[in-house]
Amino acid sequence: MFDLAQSDVGIKTIQLNMENRNNPFFLTVLWDDQDIVLVDTGLPGQMELIRAAFQEAGIPFEKLTKILITHQDSDHIGSLPDLVQAFGDHVQVLAHEVAVPYLAGEIPLDKSKKLVRMPVKVDVALQEGDILPFAGGIRVVFTPGHTPDHTSFYHIPSKTLIAGDALRAQDGILQSYSPVYTPDQATALQSIAKFQTLELSKIIAYHGGECTDNLQERLQAILDAGPVDNE
Image (tube, rainbow, N blue to C red; front, side):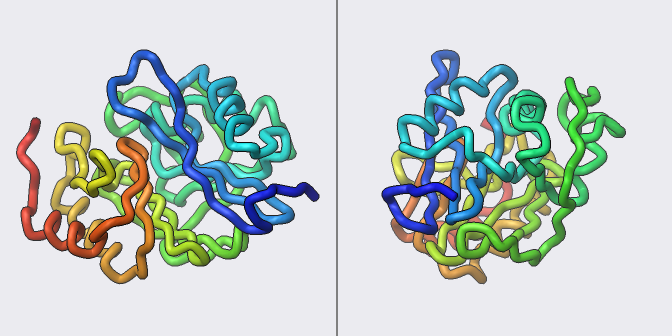
C-alpha cells in the first residue's frame, strides 16, 4: 500500500527529458491503492530517466507493479528489459497478443527487421476490449497501422486515451500519425476511427503530449483528410 497525494486513483503524463530529441517524448503512469502502472519504457538505457521522472511527479518508482506496452518500436520498449531485470517478479508485463512474439524475440521487429535486443516474456497477453482492473479501469483498444501490434489504452474514470503513436500532438493540437513511420496508413485510419466511439476528455500522444481541445472534431478532420503524404 502507498499514498499518493493526488488521489487514490489517478493518471499522470510524465516527460522524458532527452537531449538528443527535438520533440518531447512522454510516458503515462496510472495508479490505485494496489498498483502503479507504467505505459511504455522509452529508449534503451533510460531507466534512470524514468526513475527521475517518477520522482519529479511524486510517484514512488520502487512501487511499480505493471508495465503496459503500446507497441514494439525501440523508443517504447527500449528500457523494458532493464526494468524487468530490476524489478523481477514484482512487476508484470502486459501487451497485446500480437506483440508477444516480437517481444519474445521469436520474430523480427517490424521496422528494423531484427530481433529484439533482449527478449522479454509477456505475463499477460491482451485482446481488443479487455478491461484491466487497474486505476479504476483501463480498456484495451487494438490500433494497428503504425505497427501490426499497436495498442492504445483508454482510462475509463478520467476519459483519457493513451494513444501511443496512433496519433501525434503539436502545441496541444491533435495531429495525425507520422506517415514516415506508419507503413499501413489504411489500417491506421481504421484504428483512429475507433476513438470516435469513446467519450474523450484528454488524448495523450507519446510524441507531442496532451490534447484536450476539440478532440472529436480533430479526429474527424484527421479521418476526412485521409492518408498523409510522407514528410
